Image (cartoon, rainbow, N blue to C red; front, side, top):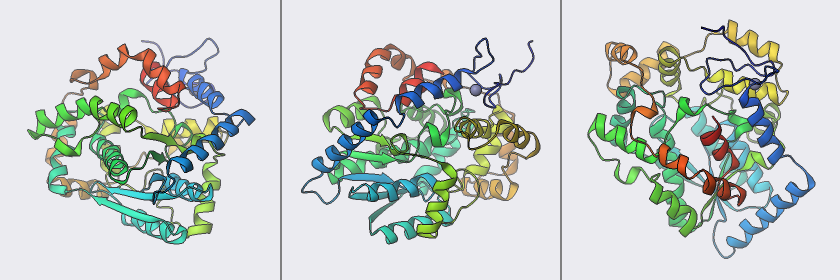
Length: 377
Ligand SMILES: [Zn+2]
């Protein structure tokens, strides 16, 4: 077996799924980052395209109460995006989805920012009794995508709200700059995969909760013509400065660490790291190193010295919510690791649609990042 290799530019190493190194020791994710950075560089022509997009959003929303939805969790990026959307002259409806794990500090942030910006807020709280078996199903399925139910629910509710309100644009604060490029195997999710796992391990139909089947998504994109925009791709984005702006303008509270808005994080970290070797910090630190907001040396040192988290208070809270004991968790941890390829998904079908997906990206109907993530990792 060859020795572990670490990228000379970021901190991704050969344990990360899909990583490849060129002859100079630079990893494939760095190259992917460069391609995306080139596509979305803040050139004059891209700035022009963005102002045309803004005009289009405003035009499409004429005569309606709102011209876009901004998904907001109260975390750093979504808070800033709502502020930016308003500053750019848009008329957003803020939508906050609580899939049972929304931390109170984040809920409070949401309240503060919508009040300060005078934006209407729609809070969607899902039925926990319906949701709980979906989370336990993903643990039983023994796959790294333990946050699948939240992702599917959030996307589904944003689309449903867009249809109900007749809104054509959904704005998100997630992008390759804010999240890094997460390996497909670490968080793969699609509507079919979700449905199958929940059916197999919880014996329930996902019903109306899941609006991410191919037919739903095609309907949203091509018939209803709803577009998803990752706002950070179009504006200057410096993570530290953004946190400062949030604090200054909205008295926003940093709950500590990325995704502090989610109370499932300790459990997700524990299972994904101890069972599957997933270290999400490698991805987020690499993103910061590439954007020169962190030095490679300090990222490597922090990975080496700091514990990954997943504190037991937080884990016990999650277990209680899920109706599980520590023994149940032990059983989950010791079961054989599976992967999305072990279950029915849309993945093989998606692979056949590589060219049309590329085209949809070129038309900016879906973000370029989708193509990079699904076909290049
Ligand atoms: Zn790299």
